[in-house]
Length: 267
Length: 256
Image (cartoon, rainbow over all chains, first blue to last red; front, top):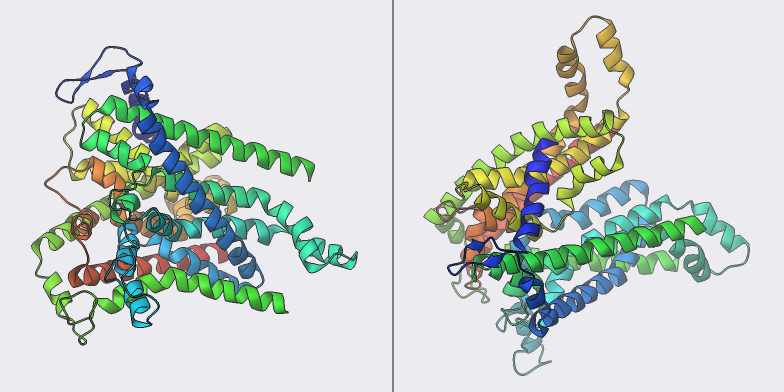
């Protein structure tokens, strides 16, 4: 426990303290209390970046949900021994190098990339499309990176549902779709929310995908925090941004826990 | 069973989506042409160039040092942590705190650690990277070990004590062997996580000791080259192999 406190609690405490201090003339920290950093974070420029991050991450989460839910459902319909194989197949890319998976999308999307060459070759387009360095490319990269994190918790929730509940609904006259909508979906809500949080949280803080696939044109809050720490050397302001991000994510966790409690309470 | 058929297509499409980009990189790594997207023939020359690239080799060396050190530290601490939180603490807040480093955004952890090391004026280098990797790898090891500890019958340890073994002997002769599959799985996972980790390394590393992901990062920023394709393929296959072995070990630990 001592290790956790030393390397986990202490850093958070230091960041929290820094946020009240001022930036020194040469990038150090001047230990005088101020709330200026918080006021600066409310500047429309930074609020805008936070808005972009939330909007992009929400899009990623929604897409991951739309793809991940049917995927998880499909896995539960397989034979038990095939289910394990399918799960390993889905999670395996997640354990591989994140930079390389992002890099693969540069190969696919760049103007001489394979997607453009394929479309040109088929005569569908006459000029290469600008696919890379767009917000769309950022969404694609994040979706690719975090889709497994959506599938796993939904699968866990779906596989815990007693199949006889669904059969009972069908026996009582519900159509397959109605049984899915009225019996399976509500019971899968807790797992689905966990999946959404698992996708949203790392998406918001990501700075690699916006940099490599967004070409620096799509700035997210992760890039901003990174730049404050490593380029502008304005640690107090970077700390404020990091705290804003973490507070937002904690609120999200709390919301998820609350909804889950309510759903389970009713059930 | 038309519903299953449709869902089967969804699964196939998702697997295609997940694997096609990786497969393309691997195929391109055998392309003889220097121009990234023109196939001119099969060649393994990019692989041999890779092994002549000094910065790649240095990155590999640093990554292996960090990976192995992190693995050892996080297994020892992670297993102790797991025993602590399952046997000696019923507080859910303590349990949540112990596993938190696995969930907190890596960027937040990274800047926090950077701030900590700079506050105590600890010079950045491989030591700080290892300490930082350990904090989140340890949480993963603890999570795996905890699942195994809950399955072990405490009567086994009590029996050993009753038969006259010392608490220390019980730990090494009963507890550790029965945790072995979880320890192996956790160790392999910790190693892969550390080997591929970028964000925390980026913040807590000094300039003179780049790890392999840092080297890869500086390479991919300048675009697509066949050499990166070759390096990427090797790193991908390496991680996949370790994760598969670790999965087997977890399965083994569940079946015993």
